[in-house]
Length: 392
Image (cartoon, rainbow, N blue to C red; front, side, top):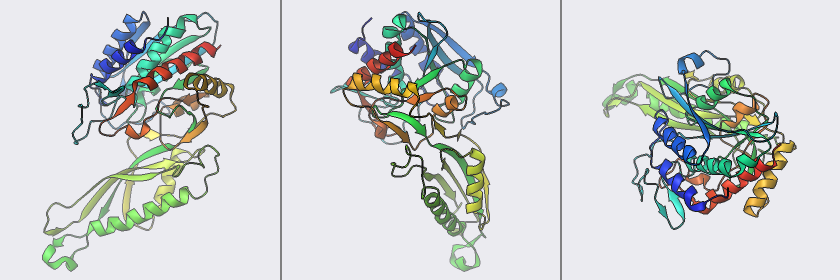
């Protein structure tokens, strides 16, 4: 069956309209399941036990507490024997934030050829593109194709980890994250950290009697910046070296003080440190500890743990994806690296060739007024269908 652009846009809007902030994804998964059923596809809503997963080797960590974890599996058997292709995408999104949206974060409005709402780019609409591609190309494919729709990507990748613990018998995987239609073969890792520095309290009128924890943190912040510069000074991986900042270190939360007229005796901070290709998470943690060894700071590494991941650009699957995307978009798809963590590494860790390739608009991900071109979603569906048709 051909890809119906109007139906794809309508279905993508319907899924965007269902809130699915990390930790509360079931309703969106069920809506996506209804769409899959309407397209005549075989589906299964999976429930995983987060407590049981916590003890498994390679657990990716998580930042959102949950009693249950859900995922959706859509399968088309194909006509071939043995070979299995995985399509993977996450349905969870970050919160809308505090700034007003032009059309509302859950509007799913289609205005001037663009779909608006949280998840339009990252990456609910891309999952719908994959679903339509599977419906169009799957019945004619020579391989079995499985669309794995997961939760909990934004806080570490527990959804994909759980799905792979259940079934990892794949020969390759494609994840349609927003990449500008380039083919991502390398993704940096990211390790969440938190820390605390102390001071000595005093009345603000006699400030010199105290020692501000904020001043102590400023020294720590300077060391963090110096560590980022050292990590990025000699990047040798040819996919990562062209990036302006391959391995960012960022402090996203900072809190100190309890009263405006008191010298603060405590400051806490939380952030993420980039993990280079080829480095373990433990080595990255040790490097950050060493950078702050001269300061009275306590570091803790809890929450999301994104190891780096890499697929050889010379792998035949990379060539196949680049060919399919180039044909669908009319532009040569490059093999590139990216500076963010993603579920791609969970496939790479299991020896499964995996790449990411999706629409334009990464700069809108996690931002107010997130949006994506409907035309790009249609191109993406054709590109994914091309991958399915070529894989055997």
